[in-house]
Length: 170
Image 1: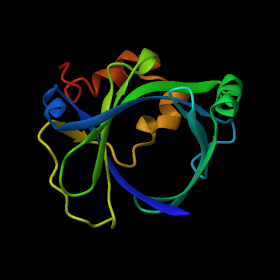
Image 2 (image 1 turned 120 degrees about the vertical axis):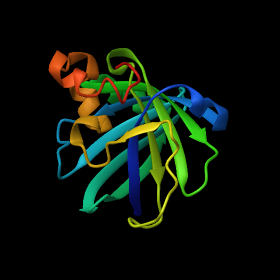
Image 3 (image 1 turned 180 degrees about the vertical axis):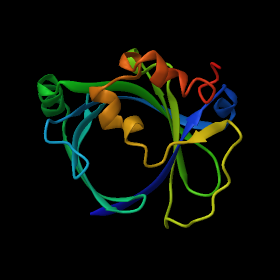
Image 4 (image 1 turned 90 degrees about the horizontal axis):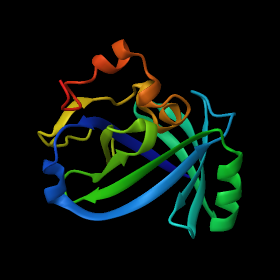
């Protein structure tokens, strides 16, 4: 079991592209038993690499994470059974202070771009890039599971408008 400690941010602009070290496409599906108490997910990268993941709150910004590799064909079969899904392109970022990734969401979650930094400790100091416009750590509406079941495009105009400035659309 790993302990996941991360902070998340809405991103504006394209300056993050200057620090990209790799990229990968993901399809993710969430199972109906996912809730605030537990999230269960299947993730497929390409057609061959896949994982089943269970996440449980561990206090504050930390979560316990159990992740297991599975065959790509199994992931495809499981994804077909998930009603809540999302597609995103993930970029690894070469930044100090933690393990940084950035997700560019596709489909109904476009134009969301969310950066995450995984930390070793919850109180770890980290330099936040200027293109991280607004911290969304702990906001359930921006969790991948929530975005899979209630995509950004289906938010009300009022809900979307509250975030437009942080998305570089204000």
